[in-house]
Image (cartoon, rainbow, N blue to C red; front, side):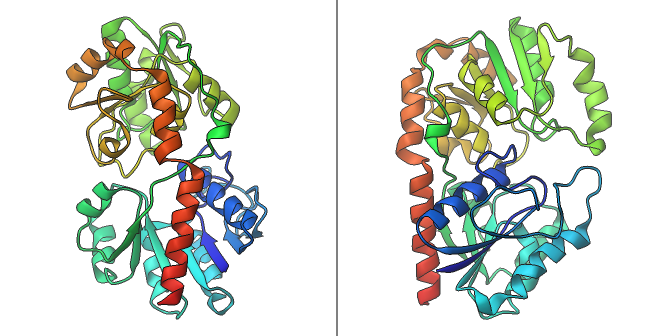
Length: 337
């Protein structure tokens, strides 16, 4: 198959990317190329890929975000629609404006759970397009869309070494924003007197929140902030943690960090808000909780979780092979239509 895949410009696209979309699309692209498909990737210029790479921007967005350049990246793919059997878009609703204008079958991937009224207006206007979800909860959340499938994220488990021995710290890894809840992680760690390591990127628009609720509590003794962790640092943080805490404050469309942590053997405690209930086996690979108090209680019984069960759950349900198998099936079915 001749496949166009459009990725976001927020991070390089690579299996080792520190960003969720960059990593998942990177895994997908590399495996499709390995299986003999002709793949063209529309992503940042510093993406690492064996596919043909087309780029409108050398590097990921820093403090220079430009929506016109985002659309130029998407337009580059659709301007070549006759050269592809299918166009797979990982840029949410931004792809909708183009998909109706070409005859090549197009997939609009929805991998996010927070939409503005204007975003929803666009999705409702183009609800007839081919939409792909990354969790069943996302389909329930946006029931009005024409869903053609659901494919869970998958990871290459060989890149995430299992470790039976656990460390003594709690881990929060994700964007340092109010939606992700690092302030709640801090409150929990201080209540329990446990060490907490935070890692993730910050953005200028969250400065007021961070200055008030996060940075004043970082002492680099009990509460430690590592900044953005590269892939190797991320692996070390996962496998040596006592538990990964996920106090998500909005509807979670999937949660790639959850399966990454589980793959290393580290149980996850997450607010029951969206897709985590499809990933975490409550009481077996972690705990689903409703609030801060329940999360505190769950951490106190984390020793009940067998770390090998965490690893096995990812191998059985969230491997990159399973993910790419499902993408191949979906591509073929839409092309045959």
